[in-house]
Image 1 (cartoon, rainbow, N blue to C red):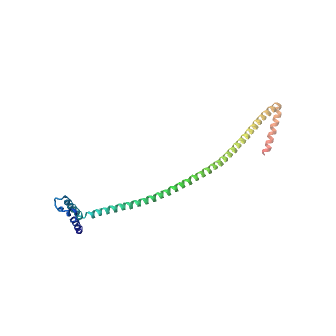
Image 2 (image 1 turned 120 degrees about the vertical axis):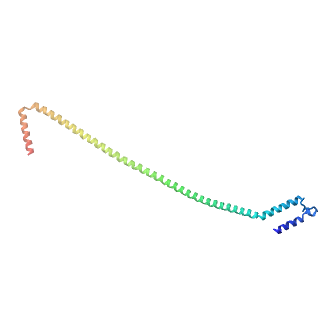
Image 3 (image 1 turned 90 degrees about the horizontal axis):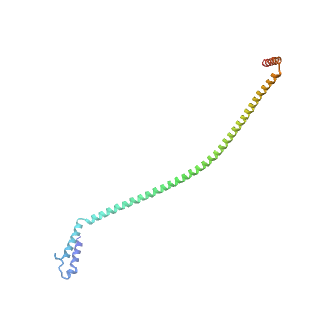
Length: 186
């Protein structure tokens, strides 16, 4: 610092104003007062170590910015990792959805085929049941017609026999029927 001050004083002494004979070192010279005030200001700044404080603050600020940049870089890398992970998961979900749709289509086709087979079997069973009912109804109708024909034939035979048969013949016929029944039962 002394060397700097000495160099400054030497520079002032060798100045053109000093060489011209003007009195530079007078308190009435404003240039001299401004120069003294500036030197005093610089000296106070160095005395209170303001440049080192400012340098420390700038270093601290630079370290803070550097740590923020490192943190931002780490966050960016983490975000890229998460993005890649979610893109993989999205692709997996898309693939799974495609497999589910394909499986569902296959199951739907299989279910439709099975439904057709089941419908064909059901129709066949119903047709068979209907044919059986028709056959049964035909048999019942034939039986009813026979029964009715028998009733009519018996009534007609009764009328014919009653008109043609006398009481003595009827009694003989009854005795013969009783004997025949008695023989078949014993």
